[in-house]
Image 1 (tube, helix red, strand yellow):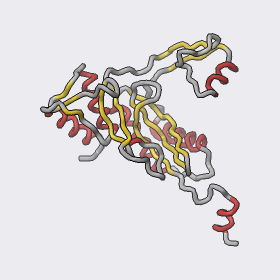
Image 2 (cartoon, rainbow, N blue to C red; image 1 turned 45 degrees about the vertical axis):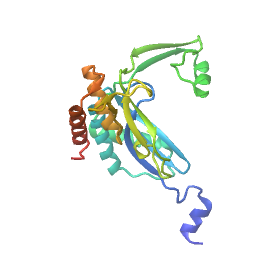
Image 3 (tube, one colour; image 1 turned 180 degrees about the vertical axis):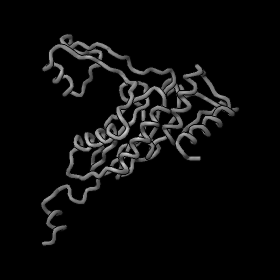
Image 4 (cartoon, rainbow, N blue to C red; image 1 turned 90 degrees about the vertical axis):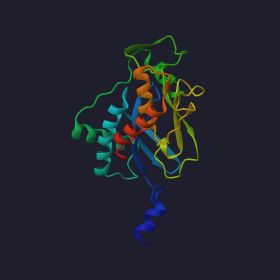
Length: 232
């Protein structure tokens, strides 16, 4: 039996493609722009948070660092997701130094067993019905914004994915899903194929406290967002 056939027979992971990539998407715990390390294996995808930022420009800076680290490190399917993440973050800090993070910081105290039981149910420390014997102190509040980036699935996610929503989603900017911001002569809602572009627009309207955009502003913001991403 050849080596390849032997491994295929006795190693269930042999031949399974490991898809790893970095991307920027909305933070799951605030309105910040988060940089994620996505790890895709056969039948599963896991996103690991690297950092979160109030500004998309700051998030893009860390994303560029992450892309550089990904181009240099080697990964193997026998490594666990924890090992991959640990090696990645160690290399990131070792190369570029410690990096900033704008997302919330909480200090949790109280009944540790109750906390672990709570988290094991898929709950979070921010849930309104958190048990009274678990105490949460807000050390740094989460990033909050009036206008946020929302996305809608436009097609089925590809099989070989690492979880980047840009693979199968379109994005828009609004106060909520049902109230997108409008821009242009016909006040039409703008959809974007890139989260970063939508986030760039969202940061602009939040910074200036605007509720609509002119057609000229939309064109200029698209140009600037594409410049940031190196597309032009």
